Structure formats: C-alpha cells, structure tokens
Length: 503
Image (cartoon, rainbow, N blue to C red):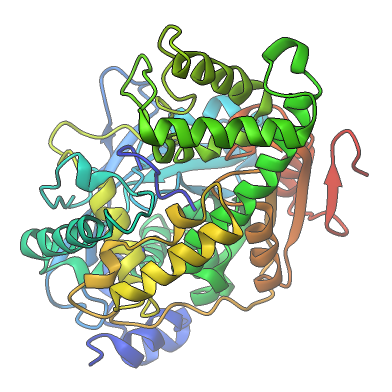
C-alpha cells in the first residue's frame, strides 16, 4: 500500500442488502427493480479538463450514492476524465486507473501515465482517470490536521508514548468532527461500487484496470464484487488483501530489515569510497552508533535536524543502496562536526497523480488515508496498550522500522466500526501482478499474498527491481508481459521472475 509516510502520504446500515445489490448481474438487477438503475443510465457531459492540457483530455461528473444501502438518498459527485483510444477502429474498451494512497487523486492519470504506457495500449483503450470519493474534486474531505498530525510514522519511546496516543486521538476526533456524516461511507468497497457505476455510465460491459499500490487492493475488491465485469487488470506493487490494514502496515518492517541487510553488504563492498565499514557487521555497527548519537544530538541536514528515530523513518531509502549510502556517509560526517547532510533521499517524492485542485483541503490526502484504512476493517485494536506491546515486540524483531509500523494510529479511536467487514478477496479472475523485488511500501511478501488471493492471476517479479512501482518507474523486464496482457488478454503461462538472474 502507499499510505504516505510523510504529509504527501484505512449495527449494519449497509450490510447484506448492499452487498447483494453490488453483486447483482444486470439481468437479475433489472428483475428486482434495480435501485441503482438511474445511476447506470446517467448521461455524461464531457468538457475540456484544463486549457493547459491537451484538448483530447476531457472531464465529466458522475453521480453516485453516498450510501449504497440507500441509493435514493444523498449523492456525491465523482470527477472522472478520459483520453479516447488513439485508434478507434482497434478500440478494446476502457482502462480505468488508480494511483494509490489511499487518498491519491487520479483525475490527471490519462495524461500523466500516457508517456509510460505502450503505444499499443493507448491506441486500444480509452484511458479513464477519476478522483475517488472524498478525494480531490470528488466531494473532498479535510480534518483540519496540523503538520505533526499529518505525519504517519513515529518512533516508539516510553516517554513519548502518551503524546503519540494523544496525537492519534486528536486526528480521529478532528476527522469525525469535520466529516463524520460521510466517513462511514468512504471505504474501498464503496469506491469499487463507484467504479462499476462509472463502467455503466460509460456504456461498457466490462472494464480493464491499472492500479498502483493501494490501487491494487481497490482493483482486487472490484474483481471480488464484480467478477463478471472485470476484464484485464494490471496490479502494480500489490497489497496483501489478507493483511488489510494493520497487518499491511506491520509488513513494512520485515521488508525493511531484508533491505537493510542487503545494504550493509553493498556498503561494505565499497568501504574505500564511503568509509562505513569493511564488513557487513562493521557497517551495521556504524549505522547503529550513528542512530544512538543522533538520539542524543540530532544531526543537522539541509532540511530539519534528524534524531535517530527521524533517520529510521527514512527506512524506505534502503531499498536503493546506491542512493542511501552517500546519504548515510554524509550524516556520519555531519554528526562528527562536518557540514549539514543533504535532506532525506525521499523527502520530495510523490506518487503518480498526486496533484490536487486548489479548492481541495490541504490535508485531504492524509484525511482520506485514515478514512479508508480505519473504515475498511474492524480489526484495529482499540486498546492503546496493545500498540505499545506491538511496538516493543516488533522493534526487537525488526530494529530498523518495527516500532514505526506497529505504533498507535488514529484507527484506535475511530468513532464507528466499519459498516461492512473487510472484503475477503478469493476468486479466479485473471489479473497480472507486477512487483519489484525491493519495494519498501508493498514488499514482495505482500504481492505474493495478493497472488494467493487471486487464483487466476500471474505474478511477475523484477529481480533486483528497486522502489515502489514497476510501470511508473520506467522501462523494466516486466513491460513485455504488461503490454501483451493488456493488448491481447494473454497472461504468462505461469508466475515468473525476470531480470539479471530471472528466467
């Protein structure tokens, strides 16, 4: 998942009735007097999205019900966009896209992702983007959060735990005070249902889909609710549906530890250049000595000074040894009295499609991330002491990031349990999962979990691939599989690894 690690960074009122409605086929829905029919048949008014964008980039609004258990009640406006297929005579259908988050806006994806999509894909598909409910231009929410409250990861310490609890409670209280009337409905299930209304409003029998990070879970939920309407689904850097959501957070730590071990080996082999140690054990000792020193006296950087815990929050950078090693060397020098180190390697990173409209609340992305991660599932512990115990246990097992991922979050104080249980993804719908071997936010283990949930899927792992996102990072050995699948519908015969040591 890609709930962002920084600011840039989820009695039944819907229940069984909505679940049944969501899965009805068109024939049975009509026979039952489908209450969603008026949404499926709405006429869209397409207009040019932005004078600064290509004229082919069009936008429209789609009406969706706030509560699928009450389709005749309050409605939301969903902002969608498209760029039509380059070769209408070869058009296959629509390729709906989501950039992750949760909370990432996707309205501009048809133009943002076009450069990385193969020409054959752009020729055969209408590229369709949308801001999910509650995001960007789709009835956005905000909670009025401070900068500190928008920070997701906090190092555990006994002295600071009371502050961590108070911060988490404050985020939950502010969100319910500002947006409590809509929070129960801002879930992955309802966003997937919105996608199906978009499908119907576009006049399509099926949709194809590209989802990144959290978008892989959204896509998987759609395949579970609407298997007969799911065409060609590419899931890039996948969440494990069985871990949603606290388990997905805690999956970051073991992945980070593997990357850290790999980094110590890389840096040791280059001791002559970086001076961090001639063996992995020496590099490890150098790093932890730096952390201990920084916890006593924060290390100056060109951004803010970093404590040892602050350095550890940059654990995603360790998946790229060539990038993180000079930074650690600069921190070591700065801690010894040298010039300030550069800002953290990932400080300016943003996900694809992360631009927002001027009228969107400043904390919209974070507010929506908590709305979804807290509202999707009922499995968040309610006792703060459970988070304390987990943070201590995970820090012992995974020293680099265990406490960061296991610490207390606003979901402990969310005022309402999820209206619906988390979606159990377990189907045979075909999908292509692509995954970097070294991904800090959706580790390889979670992509393998997605593969176990989607029995008809195939998993392509990029050996040595670094970072979050395969397709968006540029050319890779997985591109041929993606192009073949989207343009022909043919999946690889079996899961496989590609790259220097792959097959």
